[in-house]
Amino acid sequence: MIAPKDEQAVDNGVAQLNLLLNPGRAEGFAVFVNNFPGLGGGPPAHHHNSYDEAFYVLAGEMEFCVDGVTATVPAGSMAFVPRGSIHAFHNRSAEPARMLVITTPEAIDLIVRMPEGSRSQDAMQALFAEHDSQIDGPPLG
Image (cartoon, rainbow, N blue to C red; front, side, top):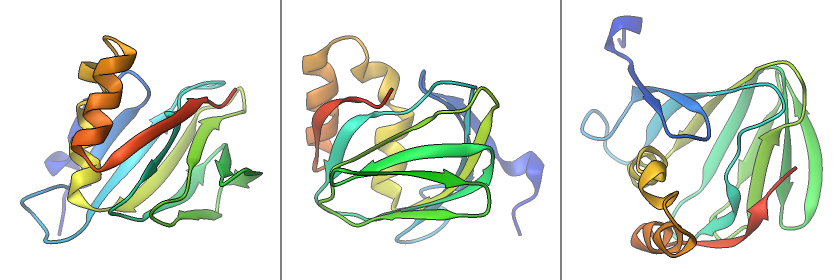
């Protein structure tokens, strides 16, 4: 069991994360809660060659664009992003939003290290490349 006090909080400049099941605690996947401020947050459009991601919206609503298809994902709904799919997402509402994210440990390292990449476009591309991923465009919104 993971007690709330065992969570690790991280602010990566895009959103605040609460790592629930991080690398070293489970083999093959990671679980975290992603907290987004109103009208904001979200990564640039990108894809991952090696892993899938599942996003379950706990509160608020998020806008997702996956392979050119844009949809609003309200609380109680899920977005699945298969490996290789170009995707981006952000909180389109003025209210805060929260998502439960299930993915692989490699994704956690990329997400936690986002501030390193924010120094420049080249640094961000290099960080994504390190994780068998690529930036494909600007953030949504």
